[in-house]
Image: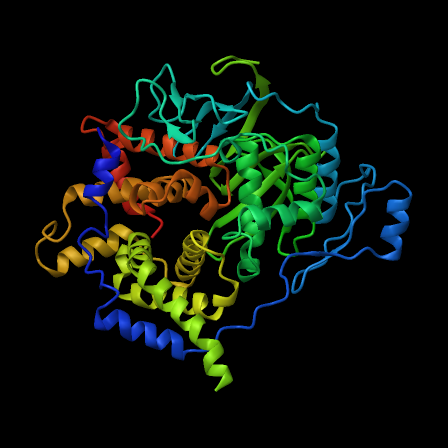
Length: 321
Length: 187
C-alpha cells in the first residue's frame, strides 16, 4: 500500500475551493488584514540579553557558571542553582525540576561518537500497549532502525538517513521517501553544540527554531519545551549536562503544575510536572521517580503516554546494549 | 507623508508574501479543520493579520514561509482549543446526512483514512501532514515543529507503518478502530 498516494488521494483539501490569491475573496481578505492595524515597530531584540549582576559576576569570578538572563516580556531565567537533593519530598515544580536536573547530571556521561547509534526502548499505550525499539544515527548519516512499533514488520526495518545532503531511504529504496535536502547537523540524533546552561539553551532554541520559540508564541513555550523533552527522551540523545539545562529551563516555567502522585503508563507511581491544556482531559505530564528524580515517562492524557525502558549508545543499528 | 513612504516597502513585501503563501496556508488550515471549513477564512485572516503586524520581525526568505507555518500551527491549535469540541466523523456524517446521500459527498475511503490519521499520535500526525500533504521537506517540518530531522523521520516512519497496518483491507483492527473512532476522535 502506497501511503503517500493514499494520503494525496484523500487529502481533505484536494477538492476544497481554495481561492486564488488574485480572487476577489483573497484580495478582500488582504485589504481587511492591512486595514486591521499597522505593523508593530521592530523591537530592538527579542533574544535574551545577558545581564551580569553583581552577584553573578561574583559567582563567575569564583568559577561558577551562574548567568542571569532578562528577556523582554519573559520571566527572568535565574541561575541554575544546584542545591543538593532535598531529603523530603519536593513540594514545588521548581524543586522537582532542579532535582531532576541533578539526577540527570549523575547519569553516565560521555558524548557518543559519530558512527554510533542512540538506542531507545519505549513502552507506549498510545493506541494499544506495545513496546518499540529505535536506533538513531548519532551523526545522522547512517540508516536508523526501528523494531516493534505498530505496523512495523516483525523483523524491524531501516529508517531514513541523510546521505550526501539528501534524505535517502534505506535500501531497497522506499517509494514513499522523497529524497529531500538535509544536513548532517539537522539529522543527527546528538547535537554537540546544544548548550548546557538554561539561559544559553533558551537562546539556542530561539535561534534554531525561530518559528517555534518566538515571543509571539510565548504562551505555548512550555508545551514546546515539553515536546522537546519528549523528543530528546525518545528519539535523540542529550548529554547529562544538556538534559539538566533543559530541566532547569522547565523549572522556570510558571504554567506548570505539581502532581504529587501520578502513575506512569506502566502503572508505577511517581511525582508529576504537568501542563494542563484547555482540551478536556488533555495534558502533558513528565513523571519522575519520587525518590531519585530520574525521568520515568510521559503521559499525554490519563490513559496514553510512554515510558522510556532503556536508553544506551551502541555501535550498530539493531545491536542491543 | 514620511510615514506612508516608510510603510510602502513593508506593504509591498507583505503583499508579495501574501500572494506566495495564501493558498498554502489556506490548504494547511483546511486539512486540519475539515469539519469546520466555514471557519477556515477566519483562521487564514488571523494568520496573515499576525504576519502583517509582525512584518518587521519576519525572517528572511525562505525561513519566512516556515515562520508563517509556525503561526498557522498556533492559530489552528488555538482555534481547536476555543472551538466547541465536536467529532470529526460526527460532523462529516452530519454533512453527508444533510444531503440525504451518505458517502456521496465524502467517500468511505476518505472517512477511513481521515479517521486513521486523526488517531495517530499528535506529534506523528503533524509531521506526516506537513511532509506528505503540505509538501515541506523533513528539514522544513523539523523547523516548524521544533524538533530534529531525525525525530521527524521517525515520526513519519511510524505514522506510515501504523496507517499501512490499520488501513490494510484485511486488518482486524479496521473494524474495531472504526467503532472506536466514532467514540473519541479528536476533532
